[in-house]
Length: 209
Image (cartoon, rainbow, N blue to C red; front, side, top):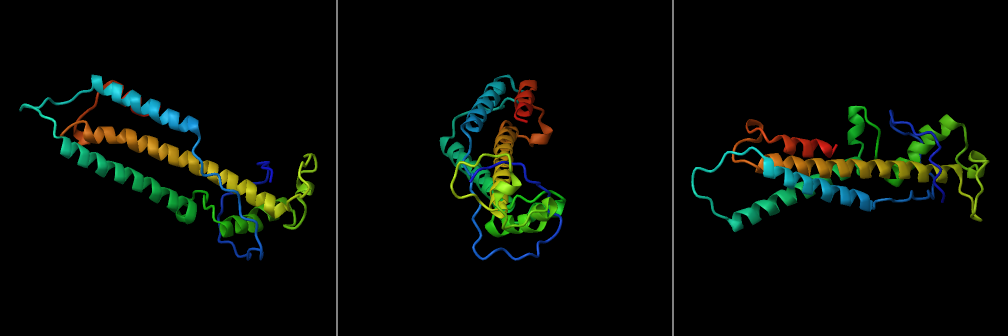
């Protein structure tokens, strides 16, 4: 099914009441993480590590020694925490209506929610019937498939594509910022808000945005 991204996309402001069709077409899933985002995460993380060479830290008053066991256990703990926070954020955004309580658009990608969104908001706003052919919605598009989807199926595809794209952007921002912010927690023995980092460390952090 082709993705046009032209149908009206409106933030949900009320609870849908229209029941879903008996055999709804599931929206396409786009859960892959683009390679370029992985590369950016690695580059920015390396930049932050290099910036620590010019960091402002309080030197230890006693001889230092490597405590590999403590470092390993803390690394595992922080890693589990960051991973769990990303999973919880994704589940809240993609499987619930949590963010709509804060006047934000819904990112729920469940089949029922996407179908209700199209039936109650998008299609009534555009004036098309759910069962009309998508060729009527896009008369100038040259369809290359024998089976042309309905307006409802096309709307499901477009809304799911948009929401999954927004989910990828949200998760990338959360992973990158939380990973960089962790540097301010582990860089010194003091509380992070009481120990000012070096200029290059702040520059590396804000470049992530």
